[in-house]
Length: 257
Image (cartoon, rainbow, N blue to C red; front, side, top):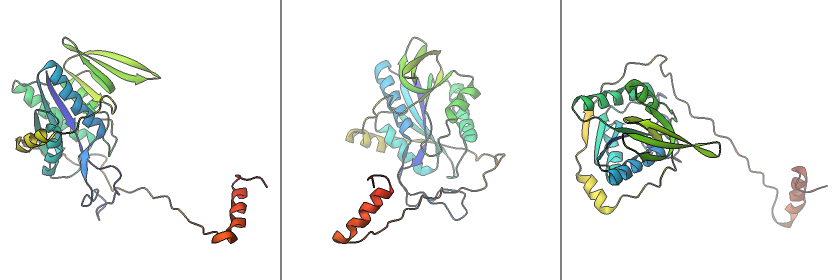
């Protein structure tokens, strides 16, 4: 079983998002980075499948040189090797990202190393595109199941479960296939100290990729949603404020007049 896991380097959730002066990119100077939660689960699932059925796993990401850090994090939990499709750091849309992954998968197949299973996260934590895995499956003419909450490997096939209306849908598809894992399919393990030491020494394969042509339609600018304002009203101090508190509670309907 040869498994490819495709992940994305995203800003740590909860950070304050600011834009560059030209409003074309997110200003990342004060942000930490991680892997999207759905994709962490996809990587964990790949490790479990290899542990149970044998084979090899590869984690791939498209991004700048610093994205090697996220690849090493996943190698530390047991993924066998990492591959960086190296860019200049500019943001690629879902169409261009999928095309780069397709080129990589085809090149490995031509070299005699085809992948039996391609795992993606259900969606990226930053853009929520829901597109890359599906576009890759379409381009490679492979069966695709998204929203996976359980995976079982069969003889030349895979069984995938997904939530549906309080129950589960079960899909049986032949391998090779594309599956998009959803957070909750498993509980990703923490890297061990030996795992981190091994990942630090692991050679990460780097493949330079050509920036895509300007898409049509093209991005004009990014904007940050307007934050909701809040106001504080000081009703008074000490016992003198009690009548105003009662009046306020009556006004909002907590107390009857």
